[in-house]
Image (tube, rainbow over all chains, first blue to last red):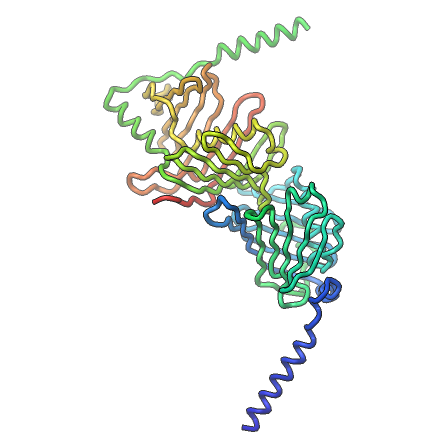
Length: 206
Length: 224
């Protein structure tokens, strides 16, 4: 009986300490930024769901991301079309599957992707309020809402919702709303933090 | 100036002299009816949602890979379509229900001409030719062909190949080749059901010609 009580007390103490350690990190954007500073690298898989009013079921894409602080990122789709976006030292390259081989894309939307990748890298670094085009505010449930300041952007992106995971510094999902009934949701899973990622991952497609 | 005028006139004469429909050798009434049934059986019935990856080669060396979602209702002859980047960003969204309504369009997909051409391409690929069958027979290369005419819109040839592939050629009223579509279906369709094309190559001919290679990602029947 005594042993049982001791175990209960020990368990409660550990839980309280754990709770105290994590309380507060997601209360402010500054707190989140601080918690993200602990993260040097992220590897994760993602599922991308495209929801639209006209679709009977969402269009699902799958891929993986690799991030090395401060600004190296590999964003890769496996399905339905293989595509790899590489960002290293501020330079971006995009490879896409054409005729069953990966070819470098030099298309016009590369610039748009550069902006998008830089934004994602900022979020992964906990810097949610650094883009002057968006206003960031924190809502209950570890939800960060980014709202465009200018009409020219809000015509294309209504808002972005970032849900933080239980682990400080990592995101659970990103939802980009183009309108109320058209949105893209990215859900992250199999997350591995702070494990060394070879630099070549961000520079070559292999 | 005079020389360039002559050149244009010469080119015009060459173009005019080259525009004629491919010659056909007619079949007897029984075989003609069989062929007509075969041509009709290549087109789907009911309502479908398709997702394709589209490799586009556009004028001026532009192009890229995009995703296309097409929702068709054969009985109602309606179309809903979306073009998006692989990252899910919608570039174009439109509905056609005897009139065209574009709900979203981002450059370079923001012209009316593009929207109209896209709807016409989808109709050509997925809907049975609207007009009357005016000929059926074999081409000079021996391939069977069904020829349809829609008054004021031109001629559509459906050419059957022997290897689960078929071809749709669309000619203007002046018999100029406007579109060539090559379709293939690797999966054998269930008995008495039309094949679902899993690879489609559409070529738009002319000065602003383009090529789209469409690979099927997903086909969802919306009706039983």
